[in-house]
Image 1 (tube, one colour):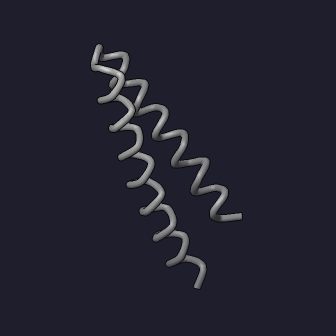
Image 2 (cartoon, helix red, strand yellow):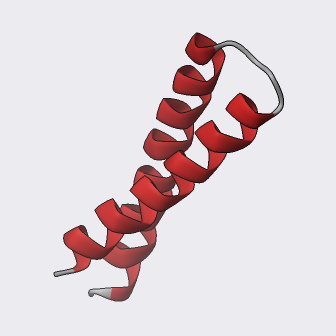
Length: 55
């Protein structure tokens, strides 16, 4: 259940980041890269925090 929450949280943050970069008239590749980076960073942080609290 916690992994599903982490994935959904990461997707929301990644989409918001990509939208902000795309709305700021950056190229599509920049928006896609920033969104992917935000997804990986948020997923790593969320899973780390969830693993600390699950023990």
